[in-house]
Structure formats: C-alpha cells, structure tokens
Image (cartoon, rainbow, N blue to C red; front, side, top):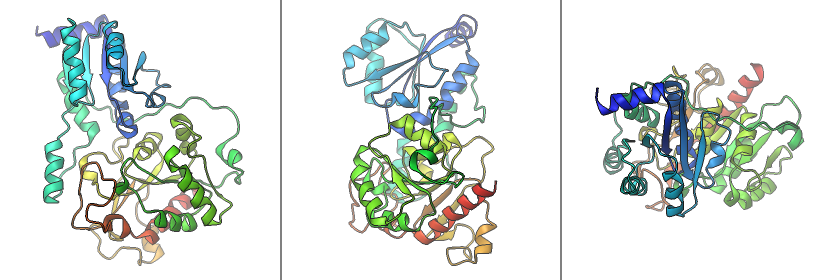
Length: 385
C-alpha cells in the first residue's frame, strides 16, 4: 500500500484533519465551496480547516461542513503558530501562490511533513490568450481544475455546483426593508469590481439605472458608496436603492438571494449569484469567460447565451434590433454573457486601473439596449413562474 493509499484509508476510517487554503478574493473563495463539500462527503470523519484572508470569512461562517476558519490578517508567524497546533494530515492549497507555498515549506521546517495537493492555475494558458487574443476551443473552469487536483484521491464532481449557506436573518424581507411593493421581482446591478477595466463607466451605469426594470438594487462595497449615492440622485427613481458600505458580505448575499436577476461585471457577486441560483447577466470587459472564472452552476447546467456586439454568437440575424418575439423565444434559464469584438481583448487576465490604450472600447461599445431587454425578459419570466 502506497503512502497516499495509507493516508486515504486513515482519513476514511479514523478521521483526521485537513488544511485548505484560499486567501482571497470573494469570487475565488466562493468557487472553493464544492471542494469543501466533496471532501466532507468523501471523508465524513475528517475535520476541515479553512485558511483565508481577514474579511473573507463571512463567506464561510455559515458553512456547517467546516470545523474551523483561520483568518490571516497579515501576521504570518501568528497564523503559522496557530496552524502548527492542529497537527494536520494533509495540506490542500487552493490558492497556490508564492506565499502559500512558503507557508507550507515553513510548516515542514517545523517538522510537519504534510502531503500537499495544489491547484494548477494554467497561468501560461491565460498569458497566451492575452498575448495572441486567441480563444481556446474548450473552457476548463476553475471548479474542474479543483476536481482534477483531487482526482488522485478518488474524488469526482458531484454536479451540485457552488454553495453559499446564509446566516438566518429573521425579520422583514428585502421588499419591506426598502419600502418596495411586495411581489415585484427585484433587479440587482453590481457597480464595481477589483479592477476598473472590468467595470462599466459611470455614464453607462446611469443609463442602466434609468432604463432597467425595477425595483432596482445597486450592489457594491464601501468604495462604491459615493457613486451609488450619485446614481440614486441622478436617476430620479423612487424604486432604486442601495446599502453600499453598510452591508457586509453575508447581508449582501442575503439581499441578492431575494433578487430575480443580477447584472454584473466579472466580479465576486457573479459567483455569489451562481451559488444562490440567481439569473446572471454578465458584462465582460478586459477579461474572457475562457479564463475559467465564468458562472458555475449545478450540472447539467442550462445553456449560456453569448452576445457579441449586440448579436447572439452563432446567430448573426439575432440582436438588439430583432423582433421581440425572436428575443423572447431564446433560452433564458442560464447565464448570459455580453461582450464586444474589441481586437485588444483580453488585455490582462486580471485587469488594469484604466484602459492601457485609452479608448476602453471593450466596455464603451456594449449594447446597453440589448442588456436592458434581456433584463426585462428575465424579470417578466420570474414574475410568471
């Protein structure tokens, strides 16, 4: 029996403890949730510990599959002292950067010779897409990379998608808290992302605030608060509201769980919506779905519609100028992607503080009329279901 076989037998029959690491960011932590479930199902006696950056723990605090959450607040020595007390049986690195590798090596120097599994990020493939602007024939999602990493342990994808348990919040519903008419489906609009080249401009956001169906909930963090205030004032709408800077991650997820549809850039809220089963309309700027970070749903997932320059990819006759009857007959259960054929896309696997070429056509050229039409249809169908 190999050392791996001995480890797996011990974990299955006697339990033990496993350390999982994913430090940030919001979407990346949410994408780890299937791994937590897979491990708990395969090794029900094992204690699962999760290491993440301070501020990310609300995404995991209600996850009953975890035994403990360890917060990294910048004090590396204190964290490693805390982890060394746990006597882990294995180290699963879902982040796999220079920092988490250094932590693993320091744990070994402390005498803990842990077997290590680490995510293969395929950064070379992403770099190649950025350099050549060529899209691969097939997309390997991050969740699929996790499954491949765990395959030597006999673990396969259970097809249940992401999960984000919510802390119970008794009291008024989102409609009641915002003063909206009960029963009307709520549209959510995500304002920001970690990188500016993933986001719509403020002029575009204002146009959407005036045209999207309501009630309309603006979503974002503390850095989006001033912009949300401006959009609320300039839109002139009484059915538009926000709590940017007031709600934490759990409360934001709770609010999103009561919405019918989310319009979002490539950001963490996109993955939270996928975990909650919320219809998503994703506006892609400098990044691509082929990077493997697109919405991940329970399998088999509904077909995702992909729009480029206002036309459905694979059907040149269908676009924002098509008759409403044509648009309404398109599948609508899955996510929808809105992109442009800007030749410099993708310019980065992450993003930039501003467009490197100054024109920002990947966002400025988006067909907002089509986006609004698809949002209206999503809310209509939600109301009918």
